[in-house]
Every structure is written in structure tokens, then in C-alpha cells.
Image (cartoon, rainbow, N blue to C red; front, side, top):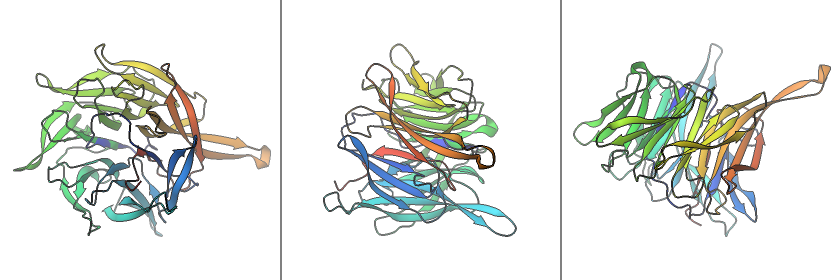
Length: 407
């Protein structure tokens, strides 16, 4: 998950898990001790090698980046939000931009770059997070689901084209309550061919389900009772029944699965054991190569892995460092980053490191990005640890996917 800005996550445009056969890259933000840094790695010759890295020039990227064709030119883009601090003599405020990056060049020429093709101000006062990217209204163009903690609310942005770099707000979801984190997501849980937008509305203690209707626009079609702050969520087929489910987690110290069925509608199907601490982040993906998506969560200093199926939902693995002074950052992602056909997951922790003695004693905060892979026996091995010293950091974003359509 992310540093706790008290926002909620919105899950959008998720798709069922499929075989990990494409060639993927690994994207991370916040390296090189800069919150505005974006870096892309490719696994080659047994190691993760840097392909491209750049600084946005101001601000810090927020957690919750997503992939999607946002300027609708047939090429996959990277969507990120970037918060910029505005300081005056009287006060300090934040504005947040929605940035879209797209690949150009090729490995063959050695000129591979990802250029920023869209930069749109989405809030002139506060922070914003991306919950999902997808075609929510059936117009064949992609939109972005945005969560805003201040001012509170959820919005749908879209409208960019191959010749226009402008994104505009297309809709504001009529919700009662505030967001706490990214607390939103999207996916076709009810199998009617249209993705639902799933957002947390804590003031009326529900998870609200919105769906686009041509005659009314985005309408709330269901509300599932839920009490407790939601910090993150993701969508996938986590029980192998061919339908999508919503997985979410948060300050109630559990991971929870919400399903839809013809008989029961939208309902809570599973609650994990109490972790004894806040569950900061969760992600969905096939980690044990059985064709069914797992979900894992970041719990305090460690992690837990779950799966569903005919035997019901169950926790299958756990681990991670338990040292004092280690706190989670919250961003997580699942994917095949080394293209070996087996899924990995990446999560992040913050560690306070003290060196020296007496007058030379100093304490430094380090971010560690931890990549883990299934060891074939049900456990998970730490395969890589990237370290950065944050400066103006909003918390890292991780994305594993095919970021280079020109390969």
C-alpha cells in the first residue's frame, strides 16, 4: 500500500487472469532518491537491467498507476498521478496531475524512451489516485477512475485522442462519503458485459456499485454494507469459477472478497483472519501457476498469500521481515516480471537506519522494493531488493506488464 494519506482505492477495468506468456517489463517510481523518478527494467541475461529512467521535473508520483490506451491510438500507455507542492508565505497546498507515458523507439536502435504524452490537472487542491483504467461507458474509448481524498469523491476522466492530449472530467459519481485511500476498482463482476465501478463510501458504511447506463449515465445499482476504512483493492477471478471478484483490505485488519451471484447479488463471501494490524495493500494474480488467481496482501512488515477454489478460500503462505522499525508503504503488484511463466509479486517497506554514535549519530529513512517469486513448494523467495532514499516521495507505484508495444 502507500504512505497513509487516508484515501481509498478504486478498482477498475480488471480482466480475468490468463497465462503469463507476453514479454513484460517492470516499472517503478521513486528510485534515484527522487519522488518524481520513473524507471523501467527488463529482465535479461539473468538480471533486471535498466531500460529507461527519467524525472518528471517536479512533484512526486502517487501510488496506484495503471496500464491502458488512454489517448486511444492503439498503443498501451502508463497512467500515473503526480502531486506537486505549492508553497507560499501563507500556506502549503497540493495540486495533482494525471500523466500518461507512451513508449517510443526500439531496443534495436538503443533509443528506447517513454515520453509523457498527456499531463492534465485533475485537482487544484489536494491529492488524487488512479483506481482503474478501462472502457466504462461502452464507447470504445478508455477512461480513468480517479479517487480524491480532498475534496472527497470519485470521478471518471477521459476524452484524449491520438491528436489531442487533453483529458477532461466526464462524470462525478454521486456518492455519500469520503475516500481514505485509493479505495476504488472496476470489473465486470455480474457478467453482463459492462464493468462496474466499485467505490467505498464510508459515510453510509457501504461499498457502492456503479454501472453506466446509456439513458442515465453512471448509476448506483447496489450497495454492500461494510464498516471500516478500506485502503486498497483489486479485481480478478480468485476462486476459479470464471467470474471476477473484488478483493479489498484496510484498517479493519483483514482481506475481504466480494462476489456476485444470481441468487445473492453482490455480497461478502470471505473475510481472512484478523492480521492483528492494518492490512495496507492487496493485489491479484496467479502466483502458483495453477491457472487460478491468488491474492496477496501486505501486512505490517510481511505478506500473506491466499487462494480460492472448491475447498473455499484459504491462506496458503505468509512471510516477510518482522524486525522493529519496518513499516509497509502499501504499493503492490503481481505479474511475470522475468518472463519465465511464473508470477512474482512486489511490495515495499520503509526502514529507519541509524548510523554513527554521539554527535555523528544520524537516522535515515530507506524505501526497500521487495520482489518475491514462488519457490515451487508453496513458499516465496526474495529475488531482488531495490533501495532508495525518498525525497518528496508520495509512495512508490509498481507496474508489471508489456510496456513496449514496438518490441
